[in-house]
Length: 272
Image (cartoon, rainbow, N blue to C red):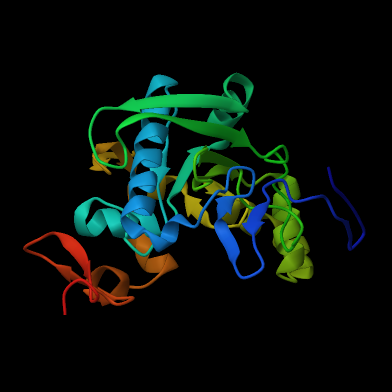
């Protein structure tokens, strides 16, 4: 665990370690299960992400857990309902109460999934669900020693994972820390009610992406990676705020071009 004395951080060990070698910083592999660099074989890597996504949302349905995609994953959905081929991970969010429920029921559990289709996905495959032991610590702004990710679902044959972040409301402790970081203490003392109104009905993750409740709910059911998934209510606004309008209008990116009649991003290496 970790404590803070004044402005001094007493560092904790990062709960989620990263795989690394002499020549690579492998920031999208869990070191405990890393075996090989799957990103060099893109079809294989994407197949692992596809299956991770399906397993996660089937798991959520089984345990009655509300979960939705966000960040770059929404952009992938917007174009063709799939992950962006250059994106190395998938981002999903849950309410912190739901993650607490999962932490009590299936934390550190090995989950097996059977699929009867696909070259890379056929057969039985194992996945490890792991919750960050510090996920309830929400007031860690600026602390480089903690993970901003609250949980992972990890493919045990490759170490590839999806990030799971929990959203919580602004507690008084979090509120005060934000104000301190923004150097607004004097203003806050004079306009306490203003800040209470500002933080009311808002939620945030540990990395302080913040949202109004009405921007998230009601969740919109859809399909992503060929499984039932959910979107935030105002997903377009979330995309534009975090990225910009080019993210959903630009048809060429990272040596890829989106062909509307194929509904696919095609690499320039595959098609000039």
